[in-house]
Amino acid sequence: MVLILVVILIIGGASLLLSMEKWNNVSSDDRNVIVFEERNHVYGAYQIRKDYNKTVSLIVGGMFVFSLAMFGLKLILDHKSDDSAKNVKLDVTQIDLTPPVDKTEPPPPPPPPPPPMVETIRFVPPVIKDEAQEDEPPPPQEKVAETNVGTTTQEGNGDDVAVPSDGGNGPVEEKAPEIFTVVEQMPEFPGGAGEMMKYIQKNIHYPEIEKEAGITGKCFVKFVVEQDGSISNVEVLKGVAGGPGCDKEAVRVIKSMPKWNIGKQNGRPVRVYFNVPISFRLQ
Figure 1 (tube, helix red, strand yellow):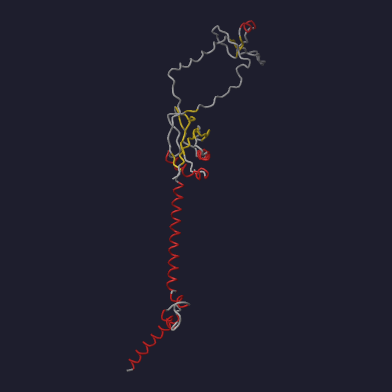
Figure 2 (figure 1 turned 90 degrees about the vertical axis):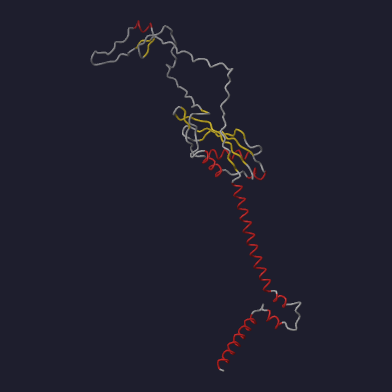
């Protein structure tokens, strides 16, 4: 009997606690029914409390969907940004700039023969010595009057040539090293053409004005690889039509390149022309 009473009290207490929990919940349907009994259910706080759980669920779901949409939009924009960074393609094509050989043109004339050797006699100036001893006696005055005076004694071939007024010691203008177009060992970017392509794609920037205007094209850049591998004489052979910014950007990137592996002809370093076409394309 006592056990039955205990069970009844436990069940009653649990029911009471459950009822109190429902009563404390302002969005509970049971509480709304009791509070708004015999009241207007169509208008007022009854509808607000009745739809509270549904409204909160819609707000939370909407925020979740909005967050997913913004995250997806960011991924799409990042993907397009990566594509625009790769819109500059490098087309490495070696152009042969060797001028055509005109077979009808006569061969160049042979070099002029060397000037005839002039007969001279060595003149030894007198030197005062303690002992009257000389390695070679000076020539007689009659011999000096008959021939030219020089630093050595030599036989002439009969044809006299006037001696330059400066004695042949004038300044000699040095000739600039020849620039080759094709050599036995062509210069090369460190690592080869593939590394040059990666370098240009990494450092080149599509000009904003040409990019907004949708200007595309190919710029042919010509330069000289010097004997030490440095780059000089950078110029545009053919630029992008209507896009001077593309030409300037191509020249800037070529000038910024590191030193190349030098070109060689007959085993010696030489200056070599090189050209690189760079394509500007929008995808």
